[in-house]
Amino acid sequence: MEIGEIIKERCNSCGTSVNHEVKTVLKRVDRDYCSPEYEIRWVDVYTVLQCNGCESVKIKHEDWFSED
Image 1: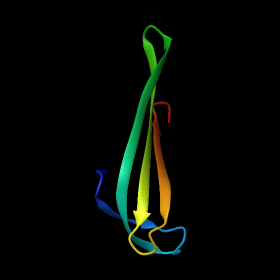
Image 2: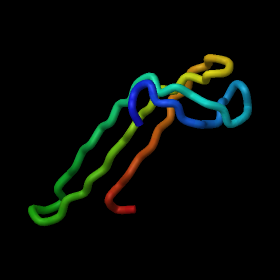
Image 3: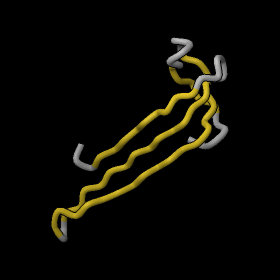
Image 4: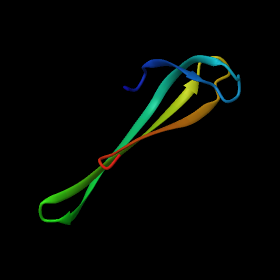
């Protein structure tokens, strides 16, 4: 997702799926080594969205984990 992009999401205030504008995106990528040859990786993405209907703001969290 990119800042300014319009996506359809469920609005917690309106209670329906409506257009939201992406206000900002924070992506955190990290890893840990259990041994020299074994790596565990994960990604967290936090997206701040504003409803184009009622203008309420919400944070969407998406994650990925290499062990899933």
